[in-house]
Length: 150
Ligand code: ZN
Image (cartoon, rainbow, N blue to C red):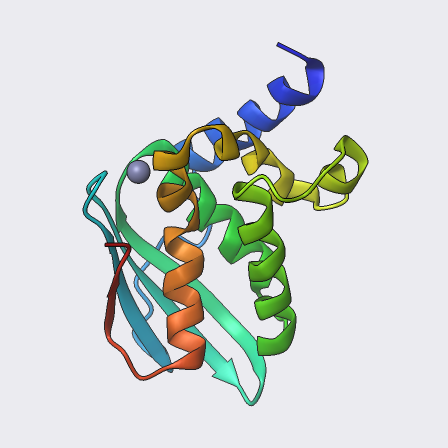
């Protein structure tokens, strides 16, 4: 395994073991439940908005290591960003896990998100990795209360 791949593996293991922002938010502006029936991942994502900015974000639930680590990394990255900035990150993440970002340098530029680059080799895992992002996207963009990857 290359040093870089090992580092990415460490990020996923660390965030799975000690997920960031893993709590219920009582005063959330929006909360959405996301399900991935293929794997059994289910999470609630909570967002508190201050105008167009994400004042706070958290999640709760259970699922595989990839889905939990992804939700954890996501919450640590999007806090205090604007809705527009989050949508842009979501777009980059989506391209990353679909294997559409070419070249190691381009991937590395994504920082912690790059840890999920390897997911693109496992199509069934793409849904695990992107579940939290889809759920957050729904919380920011629509009135839906639940989403499913199926
Ligand atoms: Zn999963």
